[in-house]
Length: 67
Image 1 (cartoon, rainbow, N blue to C red):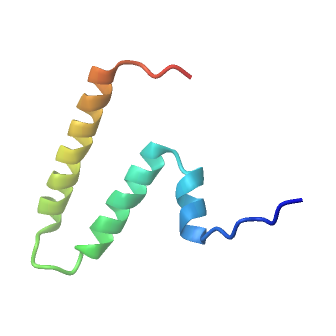
Image 2 (cartoon, rainbow, N blue to C red; image 1 turned 180 degrees about the vertical axis):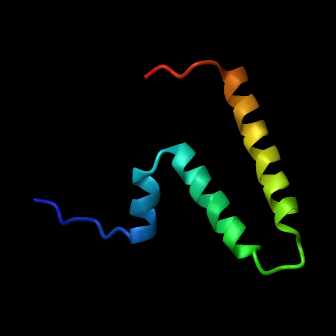
């Protein structure tokens, strides 16, 4: 019998989330991190929207996933 590997909670959480859920979590963390800065919330949300559009465009070029 092999000993269980020690896994950090952060690695486990990232492992069980889908790529889309990881992206959403990253955007939520970024939104909170930049909340009290001189950047306007609209600037951060516009940047998030651009990243989402690029991710969506890349996925569309790649084609449908085969699950």
